[in-house]
Length: 116
Image (tube, rainbow, N blue to C red; front, top):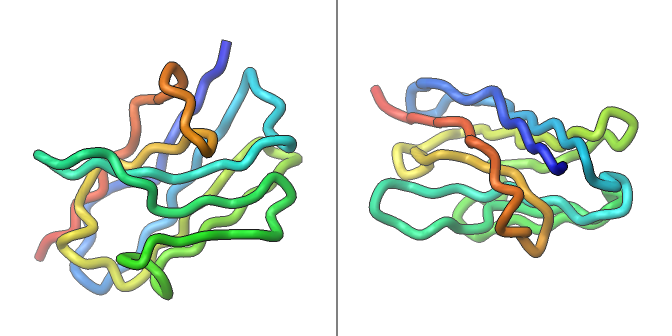
């Protein structure tokens, strides 16, 4: 049974930082590309960033490029998202999943709210 558990969200002021973590179980973590996704109220879920199985290749959406960094620790089956210079438009529930996403694997996500 696949389980993805996200953590690290919270309320932060504009310009602040957060580091999200996602611990995976039930999958061959070191063999799969992982991604961070987000869903803002009233919007569709979107890919924020992804990272190759070995961690050497990353992609970030244009809206977060230069501000967000994805990384992973295969020994801990964990993928991270370092978010700097946060903006109100980054407010969303953040999820991790494989890339491409496996629909049945979505976890509960972690809420990120950027507000003064």
